[in-house]
Amino acid sequence: MKKLFFTLVFFGFCFMLSAQTEPKAGDELIINAPNAQTYNHIKFPKPNILIKRGTVTGYKGVYKNKVVVNEVITDNKGNTYVILKKKDGSKFFGYLSKVKANYAKAIEANEIAMVK
Image 1 (cartoon, one colour):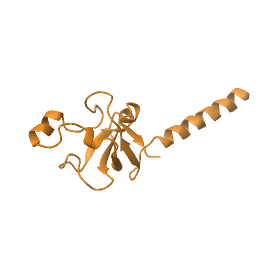
Image 2 (tube, rainbow, N blue to C red):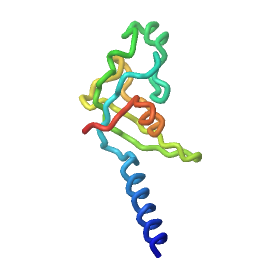
Image 3 (cartoon, one colour):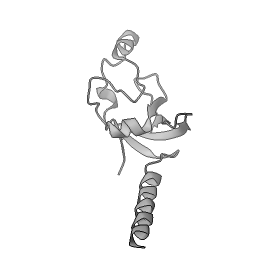
Image 4 (cartoon, rainbow, N blue to C red):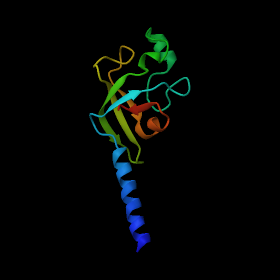
C-alpha cells in the first residue's frame, strides 16, 4: 500500500512539473547570451546575413531582451516551438518582427529563460 501511495505522489509531482514547463501565449521570457558564437535553438539570421544587410554585426543587441510568446506550435514529433516578439514592440536587428525557437531545447541550453 505504501508503494502505491508513493508512486501516485511521484506521478502527481511529475505531472505538476511538466504542467509548469509548458509555454502559453503571453508568457514573458528573456534572451540570454548563447554558449557558442551563435544561437542554436532560436532561429536568428546568421551573422553573414546581418553583415550583408548592414545591420548589427553580432548578437549583442538581443542579449537581455524581454520577449513575449506570441504563438505556441507543436509538431507531429512532439517538439514545441514558440514564436517570440519583443515586449517593447521593436524589431530584432531592425527588420525581424518575430523569431521562432524550439522551446524545450532553448530553455535547456539557457538561450532563453523565464522572467521572474
